[in-house]
Structures are given as C-alpha cells and as structure tokens.
Image (cartoon, rainbow, N blue to C red; front, side):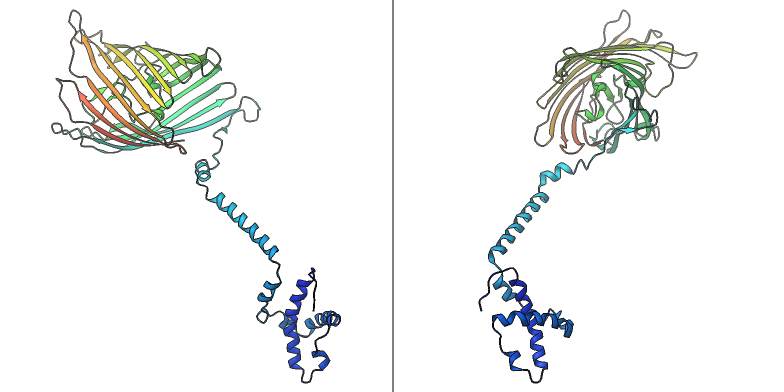
Length: 485
C-alpha cells in the first residue's frame, strides 16, 4: 500500500501499533474467528474498520490498551521520523546549552558582581523634619578596623625591648555623619581601639577602651566656608590631617607619634592631635575647575590641652593657622603655625609652659606615584623656671610609594628623622646639642584589593640612634589588615 505523507499519518500509525495487540488478543480469545475478519482488507476497507475498532476497543478492554509494556514501537517510529525535523531540534538545543554555560562560567562577571552584592544606599533618613520635602536629615555611617601583629627585635642589653610581641588592635573606628540639605550637620566618631590604662605599673600591656575621636557640629553656607564647633583635628601637621585609613604606612612617622611602649626609650612626638574648640576652613578653586589651581585655609582657636578633655587649663587659648596651595590632586604645598599657652600642676604649684611651632610640606600624586615630604619644628619654654631652658624639637621625613595598576601592590619607602631636643639653652648660655636624635628607615609593601575595601600592609623599620647615645637593637616588623566600610 502506498500512503501519502500527511499530518494524520503519524497518529494513524501509532494507533495501528497500539490497537494491533488488542486485535490479536481478541482473535486468540475467539474459538472460531471468521475468515473475513482475518483477511487483510484493501486500502478502502482499512479506513472504515479501523475507525470502528477505535470506538469499540476502549469499551471492551480499556485497561489492556493503556499498558505500555506490551507496546515497543521505537524502531518503527525512528524509521518514520523525518531526519530534517530532528536535526533542526538538535541544533537549537546545542545553541541554548552553550549560551547558558557562557553566562555561568564567566569569572569576570562573578568577580565584579560578588563584592557589591547590591550594596544599599548608605544614606538614611533620620528623625527631624522628616515630613518636609526640604531641610531633611540624612545619615551616613562608615568606619574601619585595623588589626595586625608586631614583632620587635630582642635587645641583649635591655630586657624591656622585644619581650612583648603579639597581636594588636590598632583602630576600630565608627564614623557617623548627620547632614541637612542646607549645609548644617554633625560628625561623631568613636574608636574602640583606644589605649586607656596599663594593666600594671610594670607592664607595657594596656587596656583598650571606647573613646571619642571626632565630635563637632558644622555649618557650610558656602562652598569655600565651613564653621566647626567641637572636637576636631588641629590644622597643623599634614600627616595628622591624613586619615588613618589612607596612610601609606602602618604607623605615622616617628616625629609625629614619637617612640611608644616597648619600641624604645619613650619619647613624646610633636603631633598636635585633636583639640576642642572652633574652626573655620574651606577651599576655593580659582578657575572654578577642580583640576586646576586652588587655595585651602584653616583657622582654629582651641583649649590646647588635647582631646577628650572638658574646659581649659587656664584662660588662654591655643591658636592654629594653615594655608595650602594646590593644583587639583596633582600637587599641594602647605604651611602652618601654632601657639599654645598651657598650665600644669595644682594650686598653688602651677607652672606655665608656652609652645609654638611651624611646619611646611609638599604632596604630589601622579600616575600611581605618591610623594610626601614635610618638616616640623616645635619650641617649648617654661618662663616660671629659669633653670629649665628653652628647647626646640625638629623632625622631617620624605616618603614615596608606587601603586602598580594591575594587581594593587604598592611598595613604599620612608625616611624619617626626629630630634626632640634639637636645640636647648638658657639665657647667656650657648646652644647645647644632646645625643637623642633618631633616624628611621621604613620599607613597606601594601596590597590594595581592587574589588574589596581591604588593605594588607607589611612594614619593616630599621631604627637607628644617634652616635653617642645608647644603641638599641629594636628594629620592628609589622603586618596589618584593614577593612573599611
């Protein structure tokens, strides 16, 4: 028989395969089947009996028709299927699978999306004029944690140096800024890594505590004018004005921080730290271009007795002033000066001490290269005690770093010099130079993760004492991990 390729051909053939076992079974159950029913009909007769059998089969044996075990037509179906249609379906399936694999296995997409994780907007509305469209409060929260390990070389002559290596929590800072649309706002920052008191008089181990770092109200009616009232960084040494999270080295230079704890013989640094008072500062772009020339200024009056102290030691204030000239982010040249009149002791034994100083610095950044150089001088005088001569300290440093653009590695080097009593002498006396100058060479290697707010820093400091002073074996190695948010 010859069949034409039509749409009803496939279901017809399937029906033949399904119905044939039923017909055979009926033939076996009939003891004497008629020959007319067994003889193969011609093409005209086949169409009618099949349709009749299709109506009768479900009524007589419905359960046996549904049995798939007795039907095995794959071979014949494969012969009937058109290869053109099968090839077209296979090609579509292969293309879809390749697209899905490319999307899932692209490492660049995964690395770019994973760090963000749909980071929310850090600005939140807080209580205060929340129903108004203008003058609303917004809150920004940030901070960083810096922790690491410090190893100090064991000195053979002094048991106190190099005997307390261990892990150290440098900073645990939480910074909160509240601001309105009209330029009014406040900043409050806390540090859970502040050293408070020693566990015992003979131990270098110190307890940590939560202390206030910055806390001041600000009002900025103009782009180049901002007023501050509270506790803030004194506008003096450029290294103090750099955020701790942005330092190129784990610690500030020896002239700024001095020598602390078991690093060597304790020497106070010349940092002015934070002060409680009032400050006016701002920047002005001369050509209304952030990448062009500009000037920055800061003037402050404060108690002068350091941070986290209420009221003043006397009725005389400390004065600070700073001026910067810059050309975008490329280069900046600055200078500053201060005068502070302090009082120590309890009544009636109170002693006045006057301090004043100046600094000059230059900073540059170009194509991944960062440069910083500064000099600081501070003079101390105690007019109430004639036998206590006037002393002047001097420090200077130069540092350079380069961050390569591919992986985030940043090698750095710093030379720092500090003489706490560079010059001293009383009236009619010649200048006397003491042998207490320090020279520090610090080699650093930083890794600034390109996709995460993480820094890994490693420093090695070679500490040298001036010839004529006691020589110490107190070279230091530090590693630090910083996470910022």
